[in-house]
Length: 121
Length: 241
Image (cartoon, rainbow over all chains, first blue to last red; front, side):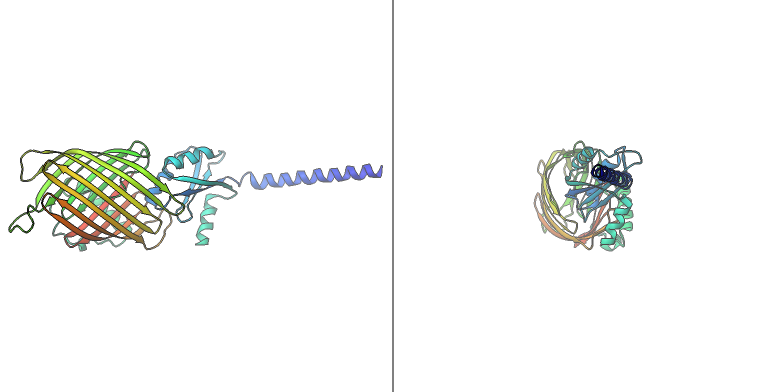
């Protein structure tokens, strides 16, 4: 009996920990891991890269945009309540004449990324 | 309007903002027909965009505009002029003017998107007509150009050849450019560059070599170059929208 009780308590503790962990993950990631940080080859000047800005900002779900030419990064944050279509984002950047090499979803806003890159200068 | 005696000092840029103002003013003059301009830079924008280009030098000018139908093709039109000596060393000879206009086709032949650089190979063709100052009537004009460039955020190199023929008239150009940027900037800021161009032009009877240092200012929608050589001032601009 004591073995059954201990096993039951252990199972309950494990389930409780799993529940707490998922609740913490949900609260910390869902509203923050929204910005797409895209690595792009070929971006060397603003006059040339403005085509990326025009095409991406024309996407209805695209919110704040940040382009960093020295880091070769395009960061796009979705508008509130909307989700980014990553495949469409990659197509728009390709149609602008550039090559996407990687996409990473980061739990930061575009403004935070901009400040982060400025601090690293 | 003759540009031969215009001094570089009158077009010296102080800052990117003023250079853009100069470019906008030059564009306005061009559209008014008072200052013909000529194009000689990145020949097209991204799909669905317009590119307006103007180039001005003491012996030539062109204004052109094109629309990017695809990411590799643009159609447009150009008007311009070039002045050439009728005969090298001929006493009392005056520069002879040729005016031209035509439709243009621009094709991005290939682009290399590299981790830290971009390289491009372009074709630009034009078909239209040209008129010589000393001759009656006009000639059918055709030109073809191959342009190549390689650049990073701090270094630029470019070269091109253009063959332009209209009956007995001839204006062939070969150029090479190299330069660097003083510093990197944020995407929204204006970036200054120092560019050196070496150009050889072959006319019907003469040839000409020029070396022109230029200051280039690049912004998101504006591209302006101002410079000067022994003949006078040079102004190039591009607007993309």
